[in-house]
Amino acid sequence: MENLLEVQDLQKVYRIKKGFFSRKNFYALRGVTLQLKKGEILGIVGESGSGKTTLAKVVLRLERPDGGMVTFRGRNIFAQGKEYTRHVSVVFQDPRASLNPRMTVREILEEPLLVHGIDERERRVKEALETVQLGDDFLERKPEDLSGGQRQRVAIARALILEPEVIVADEPTASLDVSVQSEILDLFLELKKQGISIIFITHDIRVVERISDRIAVFYGGMIMEMGEKEGVLGKPLHPYTRFLLGNVPVRHPSERREEDFVETSQEIPQSGCPFYPRCPEVLEECQREVRRAEVNGRIVTCNLY
Ligand SMILES: Nc1ncnc2c1ncn2[C@@H]1O[C@H](COP(=O)(O)OP(=O)(O)O)[C@@H](O)[C@H]1O
Ligand code: SF4
Ligand SMILES: [Mg+2]
Image 1 (cartoon, protein in one colour):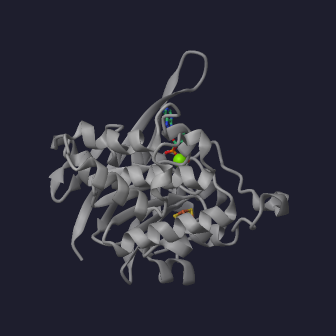
Image 2 (cartoon, rainbow, N blue to C red):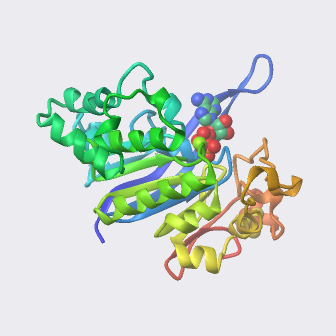
Image 3 (cartoon, rainbow, N blue to C red):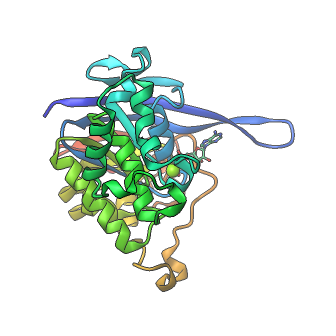
């Protein structure tokens, strides 16, 4: 399958406060390399702070990388004009924050068309609403008149309005009830059937299981393991993937027990393997270095391979 987006050795460094006067470099992305193939859903999973949103921001050109490259159809995305935003669009986690409360659904959906000087607005708006299974009666409503699920459908319709090839969805179901989550996941699967390629970001391993063709497991700004879903989840090679699979959150927040909450380590090592302080299989060399290997078509960043 053809690669649409290629991310090559991406680095993103933030300067963070260390003490009163000093600052230190913090690597939010450390050498991330991945490809999005045409027509697939690539699931990106990892706990909070692993660099998922930073990756999304760079791919959407909201942040500049400090090293590495992102190409779309073979061309550096930062060298492309505003047409790039026609091809690659976004759905964020919280539609309450991403939709302008003063605009009607019609205005929200028309805005990108006006920005890009595209005609046939009436037809395009109606088609986008139909794709997300909302009727024309929603056109004059405002976000506050909608349920959480309906709002996220409007956000998805807005992402579709320019007929993109790629959608980057950053935790698009995290703010929704479980039953509504399921409907929105079905909608993304439907978009895939229509030929849209999707980077789907989530902290929830059950969500990636449901939706992805391939999975990239993030930790400490690195890809720990990446490959076809069946392999990564059915026969995980990396100690962190195995750990994540043992920490699947239970279905409803009220049913959660204390041990279901994965503790996010504040001090993620900036060299060697980021997972070594928590790894049950740590080797002596893991503090100093970490190797990337390819095992049966799977990428694994771990010294055990
Ligand atoms: N603007 C910023 N300044 C400093 N640190 C940041 C900034 N944005 C993100 N980070 C840090 O980078 C790491 C990765 O963040 P993020 O990409 O948001 O992770 P995720 O989406 O996986 O939760 C976190 O430790 C976060 O605190
Ligand atoms: S590189 Fe070492 S510390 Fe990291 S996951 Fe592999 S064995 Fe564990
Ligand atoms: Mg995030």
